[in-house]
Length: 222
Image (cartoon, rainbow, N blue to C red; front, top):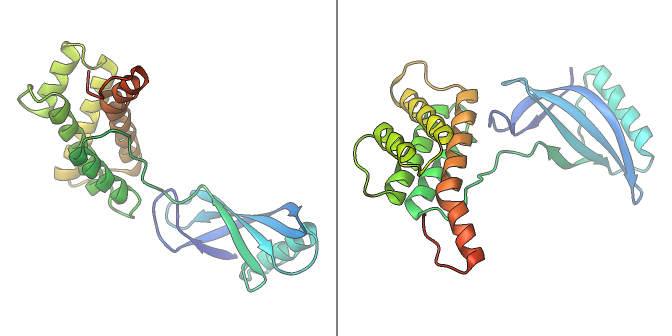
């Protein structure tokens, strides 16, 4: 089976080997012949598509036919006559909510770096939890007690919807698993925790700041 190497956008593995399972004709653009290569990560088994173009003359159909022959023969698909144009999905990139306090942004950024690093789910989960805890402390400094108690108070006093409160309690638990449990944190749990924290921080900081800007008012947490 033919292989290619790439950074996996799903599990974060760098320079990982991918098993090629398909080659498809793309189109000719300005006389450039292109094709798409489908492959699965040998670590997480999830797929990517890499688009390549040929440096040699000829149609996309001819280029694709040559690549398929290489695939059937188990040869290396990419060589001196091919150049990568793009990959889908792209490698994981940090996506940080706007208008966060500096300490919250730092913790969330560290979580994002660990999220895109192989086998760092526990470290990422702990930093997402830390960004949540720092965010609550920054936005609601009058609250005391554990993170769980502060989340309950915010829901009770209608600063947060009950649904977000439930989400954040799950983040707290996942973060605790990352710190204390032998089993650690799965990739699916990490992705869920990230989504919950991202939504909560946008609700607490980004949305009020955006509304204030549109009203021409100083940005502050409601």
